[in-house]
Image (cartoon, rainbow, N blue to C red; front, top):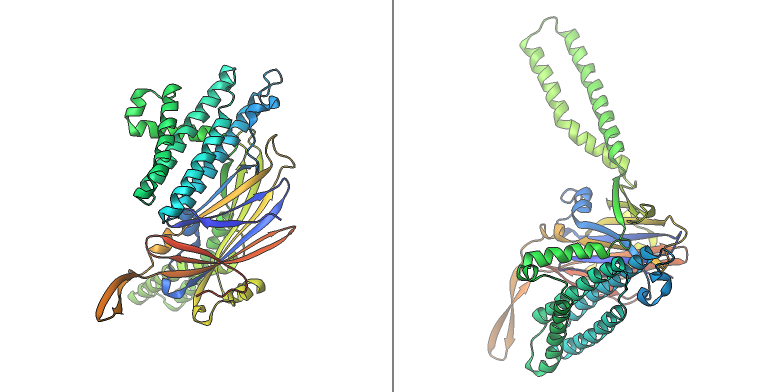
Length: 457
C-alpha cells in the first residue's frame, strides 16, 4: 500500500509526500488541533490567506530505482529519435539525486553529537560520490545531447559541493573527528576542481557570487524540464462568491427600497426628518451588508472545495494529474469517528480546548501510462507555519533549581503543541496517524509520530 510520509522541511515548515500510479486516485486529510491559547481561529487566520501564503503543492515524476539512462541504448539511440527520452531520463536521474541529497543533508544536520554526525556525513560522501561516478561514466558523443549532460553535471557538482559545505558550516565541531572533517573538505575541493577542469564556468562568473548563484538557478530549472510539472491553480469559489455577494446585495436593496417607499408615503413633503431617516437607512445598509455577505458565504461554502491544481507536463502540455483542495475551520462534531477516536488517546492533561482546522486534498492521475523510465508521480505539499507564529505570545521565563546549597536558574522558552492527525486513503486501504508538532516563535522544535496505544507526555 502506498503511504504518505510527513517530515520537517525548514525551520517553520513541514511537508507531506506520497506517490501515485497511473489512473490512481487518493485522498489526503490533515486535521489540525490547535490549542485555543495560540489565538488561531477563523477570525484571526483566514483559510484563503493561509492557503495562498503558506501552502505549496509540487508534483513530479518519481522512480524507486535511480535509473541510469546513459547506459541504456534505448535512451541514447540517435537513429531512432530518442533525444527527448535521453534528456528526460537524464533529468529524472539528476533531479532525484538532488532531492535525496537535500533530504539526507537535513537529516544529518539533526544530529547534534559529533559521534553521530561525522560518521553519518562520511557515509553520505561515499554514497554521493558513487552516484556522481555513475552519472559521469559515459559522456554522449552527440553535441546536443552533450550540452544536456554538461548542464546537468555542472549543476549537480555545484549543488553537491554547496550541500556538504553547509554540513561543515552548520554541523557540530570536534577536534576528535579531524580525519572525517578532512574527508568532507577534500570531497568539496575535488568537485570544485572537477568543474574547473571541465571549464564549465568562466572565471568572471566564478568571481561574482550573484552570477554563479543565478546561473545555477537557471541550470536547476533546466534539469526539472519534463520531470517537474507546471502547476495551474484554479479558484473554484470565485463565481460562487460573486453570486452570493449579488444575492445578498439584492435582498438588502429590496428591503431598503421597501422601507424608503413606506417612509415616502408617510411624509408628504421633503423634511429634515425624512432626510435623516433615509440617511439612517442607507447607513445601516452599508454597516450590515459586509457582515451579512460573510455570514451567508460561510454557510454556503462550508464543505465545498475551494481550489483545484492542474499539473501539466512541460513536454506535451497534457494534464497529468489534478488536485482538488478543501481548507476550512471546522467544529468538533465535524470530525470523523476514527479521528475523534485517535485524539482521545492523549493523556487527560493534554486534552485542552482547541480550535480545529481541516485540510483535504483529493488526487487524480489522468493518464494511463507514463513516459518510458518513469514509475510513479510524487506529490509533495509543504505547509509553512509562519502565519501561526504571529499569534504566539512571546514567552521566556526562568526555571530555578536547587543544587545542594546553591540556587541556579535557567532560561526557558514557551512552546506550543499542535496535534495533527493524518489520514491517507487509497483503494488499498487507509493510513491513520497522529503527530505531535512542537513549536515556538522561531521554529518547529520537533515532529513526533505518536504510536497507537502509546500516550504522549
